[in-house]
Image 1 (cartoon, rainbow, N blue to C red):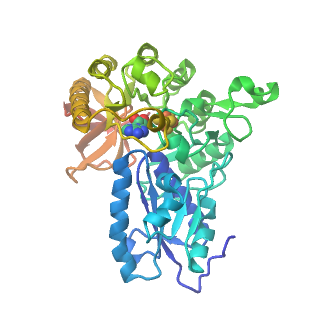
Image 2: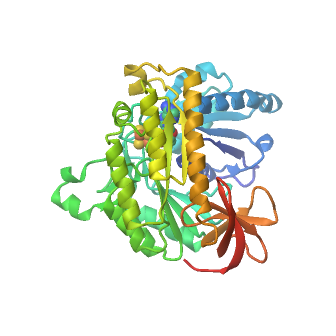
Image 3: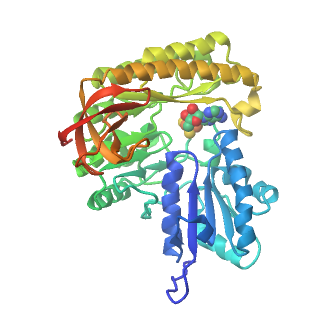
Length: 468
Ligand code: 5AD
Ligand code: SF4
């Protein structure tokens, strides 16, 4: 399949655009690696590209609409370059499969999240005339042996994918259908990637999975419960807390983050591992989705409001200053006003530093779409979302104001959005911090005295360089 790059000819140029979650951005780095191995070079100029890949997201309707708009726009590029190949990759490709080729006449390649190794072949098929598709999902593929090419990287923080797919089947979610069965990546290959990033001077890594707490390596293949492993497999298995421990020990000078945790599966062992290692950041992203037990049940989340609260208490008991963030869905099918109020009170009780908040968007083929009616009117969803945002913003403002007068450790990532006179970076708890540049540089770990705060940012001045 692999074509040796021909240096005599000009190499074909690849432009990748990523949408959606961090996992998709990490996947684009795998895609670049596969394409580079096969003679393509990357370009950041879409007008200069021979191949354009959109790595897409299907989680909400508006994500797909954005991508459709983008495809319309790309029609112009195709007009000026007849040979331009356009590929739709990732979750939207997997969800719509060949329908995408019927609907979007300009798309030449459709590839799902488990078929990226086939991309050079799919492009070659298009070169022969015609269009190419591969949306087969795999039970084993983790791309563990590949060396991701860091795209748009600041050279400081990087994502490391530790597993793929999701077996949870939350009723609203399309991910189990677009990303397939859950499988964990070999810890050896994870460790190699982390060590290499360390060697290249990276300072921070984020271990990525849809549900990191269910990470379990026992030799490969689809997820199994620990209980169902043989004694030998159990002895050689690596769970998430063991993986965290291994990674944190291997690169003691690097900051380690991870995402996403699941309230049902998060364990005290993981939180104690975080507490044990100074280089694991004190931050947990623990999506609640709703604050009402009946709604959580209809969402098939497998936990109650009380269970969720217990997990928050457990985290705060072990790591009192832990940053905690959440995902919240407004106006899920059948949600009453009282149940919505429970979500507002859970945000208040949990004191989330930050939340990603969404209106429910019914996704075709999901259990919710099959079994429930999307019965909350759009204006009610919007109003509930606004109420959720209001409470969360008040909470974020309160949490951030508590840093005033204190010092925080900030890993400098780059210019602040508002001024190129200021650096920005995140503190241990994942809050954005901005301060005047002085003589500091990206990659420095700086102690900053917080003087002011907003809903999203801490503003202060540097005190000096620091260590973890
Ligand atoms: N509608 C709205 N939000 C959704 N999410 C997942 N599926 C949907 C949907 N159908 C949200 C959840 C999840 C986050 C990644 O996206 O909150 O945690
Ligand atoms: Fe979707 Fe639930 Fe899996 Fe997250 S855990 S990807 S919300 S099914």
